[in-house]
Image 1 (cartoon, helix red, strand yellow):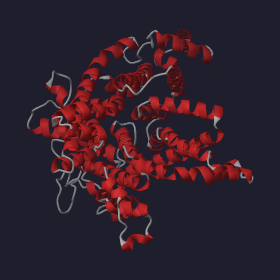
Image 2 (cartoon, rainbow over the protein chains, first blue to last red):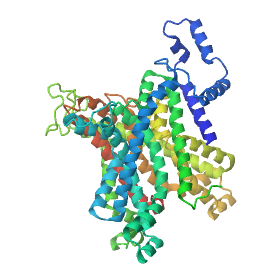
Image 3 (cartoon, chains in turn cyan, brown):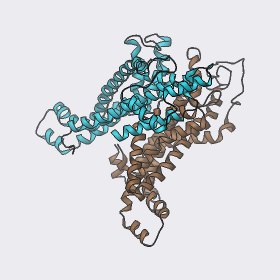
Length: 295
Length: 293
């Protein structure tokens, strides 16, 4: 975990320095004299050895200090703080939606195997995986907000504005979760202990809920964690389509404005979230499955 | 999912000359459908300019934003350019970027993975940690970061999308190669004095070929999605290049008056990705049933 974080931070640091252009010159403004630029450079510590700069970068990053945004002059932490909320709201809504529909549909498919609903759901989930989120988002805008005005086409204004972006972001994950739930549950339903439970007269509903689903969902938890990570990546595209003022939207804006302090902090933040989710999934996995023992 | 088809597939008399993997592949209608779609897209990519109904860049200001009709099967855009022709020529960019990105990722990743298995020790350990770090970035984020450094454009998108395939291929190749290292035939090859390169490419890499083929196909879909997403975000190929994601982005402005400008490129991307995904699923079931999730 720690080595990975260090590696990621080194990546972000290299990224910051690989970018074309001199940040000191950019900060000093177009009319700055050479002296001004030099002053800014030493103020930012950019005239010191790279190794020292990296150490400083790590120290500041640990303290949550990423400097100031080139664009607004506000501290990067403040800028990010303003956009964390919307992304959290969107991604939590989306993962909730994906988990509920994915698991529900997958369970239905496994129980009614090879029925019409099973085939129909398979077709939908393959289509869901293959459709780009930006296309799905625009399609939903066209259907639900251009003509019939059920939901706003963008921006953040209450619960109604959350519906279309959340559905767009959830679609691919729901499809993957459904597929995985189906195959995992089918596997468990074929186990001996399920047959035993049925043979000794356990009611069908109880066999499904207590004996089968509980076992089948253990691997699904891992997948949900992975999907949550992908969702954060997908949020970049979906937030741009719906002008949702979250971290993903900010990322694209910062690239446009070459706002590198914000950009670096965002890349670190995204990776941190991704790593944190993976850690939580590992812990959850051990808690759910008594067979997994951590040494 | 298809245990019955896999386990008890009785070989048809006429199919006896065929490899059993082919027989398994052709038993699945979705796999064959995916193959047909993917082959059609590849053919269109290769033929490109030869099969367009109109010159893709020809403007016609008396027929702008025309809905689909017999003359223009997919309609026209805001410059009166024929949408179908642009989509056909665009295959060269969208599909071409996806294909070349995955090819680069597969080549470098496979070489890396087999080198890890062969050398072991510190090199292997260090490599797998680096792969962990690359995995720590969500794919699209890594691609965006790379494009932010290198700048937008076709080549840079290919690099960005290719890089994030590398660690997956490295891991995929490493595991079977590592297993093969313990096999007698590798020891025998060593005993008769075969060099490192020969062992890696003649003896280790072939054992990893089935998963490479499967993953390569599945990855093309993801690569097309990522590359077109980058273009859609304005970080990839720029208009007027008829790349599908870029076309969708510029068509967005006209969604109220000419929805075909969004729907046509969107459906094209989905169909291409769908084709390669179905083909990949079919290949996986045919070549390596254990890989199934």
